[in-house]
Length: 263
Image (cartoon, rainbow, N blue to C red; front, top):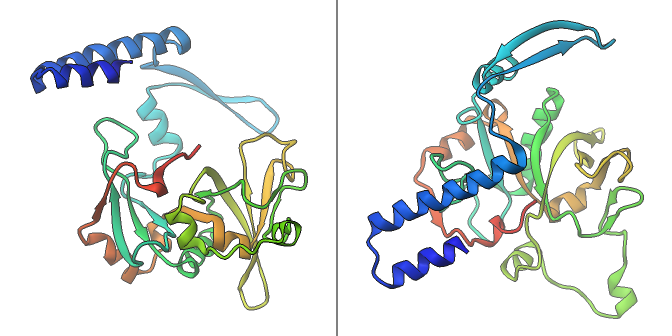
């Protein structure tokens, strides 16, 4: 409603300054509604740390920032890189999505587009070092919800319907048939004797009774076709790939299909 009113004001010739003032006023109303539902964000809180038996070992006061610095401390803004597999665009190039950011004063999402074999190497290096990762997928494709298995052989739609499906990953992206729809935590990989991945495991957010103890297991073939994003610590990224991040990114519009509809 508020966005509509702003557009109507703009059509009537309202100045940019007046529109910005109105926008701030409207956001104040949104903030007010959120505080009624969830409370005012705390500036300080008390938090207790417990041992494995549940005994309190320390209790301290924190601000959100001091809590982050003590219990996490990583520089999320500079220590990590977002890589993407988007075969509809040129590999080994950096792309930026206009207006796609999580905070008002943040920066646009920037990602490095890499082939799947390169992304797999980064993921394996991180997992071997015990570091889990943010990752995203088109999770609804070929999902056996009861078993928690994602496998291209789960359902034989072609034989059932008598229709051959011929689109590859690039064409599915271009036609909006497939894209990044759900984020999960990549926690494990199964490697053969040649260190080639056979299957992967992610921790999902659908509860412990969903899938395999709350996790999903995907074959490497499925992973190649329906995995899209990975956030990985830069220390696992080869220097020649990191160097690409210094190049000026290709700007993509906010409605880019690879950044629409993710949970």
